[in-house]
Length: 246
Image (tube, rainbow, N blue to C red; front, side, top):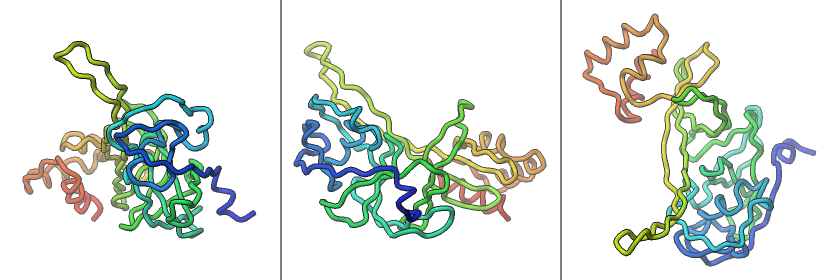
């Protein structure tokens, strides 16, 4: 058995459907070809591994998408740093699952990658997505997929997250019903060399300074002040990391 077989945990072949993301979809109408209807797969089936346990006969209308991209994108699969195969992938951020195909065809079977820290996928922009352990802003240890944005003494990550909100019935004639929906969020994380941990980075000068080693705090404060930097965006962090990683 080769490595590519051993690192893929399971596979399924989904039936074709013609429902839309915000349309109606029953459990026997799930499509496998990406596009708008792909947004419902994660909610109705959960992760692929436990799909049989989570099927619902209920018809559901959901706004938004569980995926960072509803279409499959080209990528390269690596195991322990070794290239394994060219693939097509999409990320179900709601289920925190990477789904892959060998061919970008509607009929091609979809397989879910094992949540293994030795597995990584290089994306079209050369950024790497892989399974990590990290600490969120509440101090809780989490496991999930992070995308590496910048690697160095300070390694910068992005996390894509999707929350599901239950539908709400109309309370009265003045307050309309609201459909179920997926809402996308973005979080950032920082790994400082030698610490062996990844911490959530909230986008502010004060939060960044808390994560920087004590012997670099003063020089960073001075740099932020002299360059009138107020960290509010991803690009602001890149600018500061160029200074820190020198």
